[in-house]
Length: 63
View 1 (tube, rainbow, N blue to C red):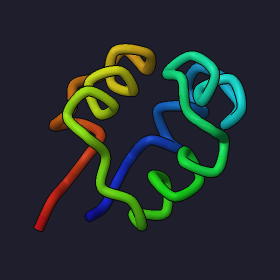
View 2 (view 1 turned 180 degrees about the vertical axis):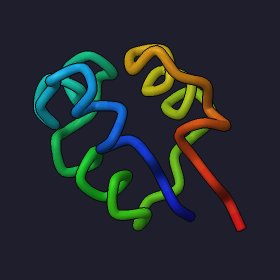
View 3 (view 1 turned 180 degrees about the horizontal axis):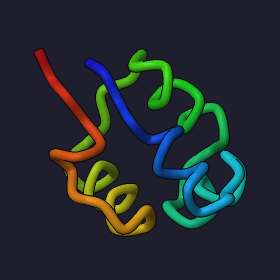
View 4 (view 1 turned 135 degrees about the horizontal axis):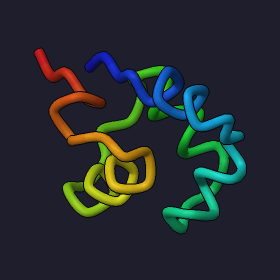
């Protein structure tokens, strides 16, 4: 899985910690998401996308 979370987060000048708090997870979860090492639940993917003003399809590429 490839993610563009870091890119979209940077556009909003948002830290990993801020994104984590906004979606209700630990910062480490955001780190793993950005590295493509964690497959999020649909709810988490939706919450991250909404917070970053993007769609799930824009943020996550599943092969």
